[in-house]
Image (cartoon, rainbow, N blue to C red; front, side, top):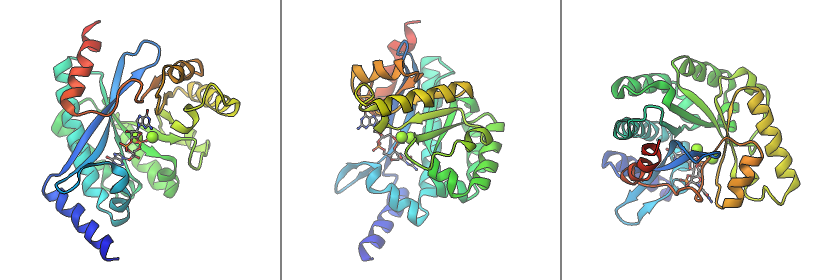
Amino acid sequence: MQARLDDERAIRLALDRNEFRLSYQPIVALADRAIIGAEALVRWERPDRGLVGPGTFVPLAEETGLIVPLGEWVLVEACEQLRRWQEATGDRHLSMSVNVAARQVTAGELGAVVDRVLDCTGIDPRTLTLEVTESTLMENLDQSKRILSELTRAGVRIAIDDFGTGYSSLSYLKSLPIATLKVDRSFIVNLAGDPYDSAIVRAVATIAHALNLRVVSEGVETADQAYEALEHGCDWAQGYYFARPMAAEELLIWSVPASGST
Ligand code: C2E
Ligand code: MG
Ligand code: MG
């Protein structure tokens, strides 16, 4: 109990002291490796422990509700970075994906926060993607539907993260304005060797394309996996094979040759 309180206090302090950082992982088109955008991934630069990943603090931030202010910081920072990135590359189509936790949807301020961020940064709403998981949607389907529909009316895109690992209800695919399915890494890792994974990914891509959605394969680590993901109908990919999550300045350097070569 005491340790939890200490951790909670530490997260609060970290917000005040501006200790959170974003890493950006490129998302590329499988067919030609053109860069589509990036996903913003939060890290905590702890003065005593160095840079720590979200697995160590996002769950507690979700439980305590601190994910609401933290998530807002992430949205603002990611959108500002997107604007700088689009300006530096001259590519206004580059997109930024931001993870959104269930608490951010149920807190009811997500729409207002996104509106404000879009207003301040002036980015095209269609270049912002919010990533939600299936469990986030199912936690309060009616509210999610209402809030996410409002956001998509403004142009923002919605992606389903870790698709296939949660409560995979196909009914929300028709009732929610979803643009992208991100197929969980667990289905990609052995795509060539496992006939079940192979059948599942192919079927997901078929359904997605019939509904006019894009399919992203997550966690692509090898050339074989990239090849198989494309063979199985995935459009885009993200993973260590293409690039690891990186700092904003590295992202710029990484993406300039790709966008400058056309
Ligand atoms: P996610 O949204 O599914 O993000 C993908 C995770 O997979 C990231 O881990 C990324 O670094 C990792 N990854 C990417 N490519 C590969 C690969 O080729 N192999 C392997 N093994 N892993 C790969 P990370 O950064 O530790 O984030 C973990 C999770 O924490 C995220 O999963 C997301 O659910 C959550 N998260 C991260 N940032 C935020 C945030 O700003 N807000 C919220 N609510 N959650 C966040
Ligand atoms: Mg994600
Ligand atoms: Mg994921």
